[in-house]
Length: 238
Image (tube, rainbow, N blue to C red; front, side, top):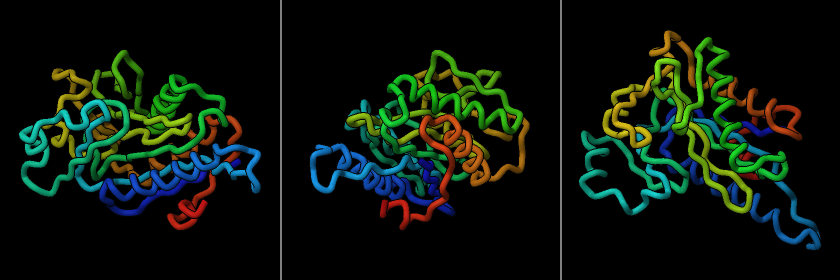
């Protein structure tokens, strides 16, 4: 089994990869129908979707309908910023140019994972990606991945439905960190964000980091023995 890797070029609205993810999730859920059906449902391969969005704030499922109009207006202030309510876990975060956002869609049971181990797997995959570039990343009592100076470099937020995963990570490569000043990360006002440049690594392209992350994810998944780079039509036509 190969991990399918779809990288969306350029900058996209957050809604576009979310729609692709929803289609892939529906294929996985359809494959969970009774194996006695004729023909038996086909189980889709795991898919990693990587991309950069236009400036976007998203809230987690516990915050849906709970942010006030003034809070949303603050996030959108200045124009050119989108806001979406998301079914992922976690609190409000930022996605945008310079950040590698990755959605991983797979069946936990296929790869022998529990929900808790899966989140740890995402975090350790980010840490290994950072190590590839000489950056030390760590897991703490707070969600996401942090650097040795106590700054957050990656967010992690997932959604599960019948063991099928959605959403994933946001890793700051050369993200403009001023966007994070509008939010309180993990509910901790004293915490700040960082990126590769803030950790002394310059000139790295987001697409390159996405390829490294994909290789690490593929190596860490049971039953996966390689990566298949796919286009959007091929991915959604699984």
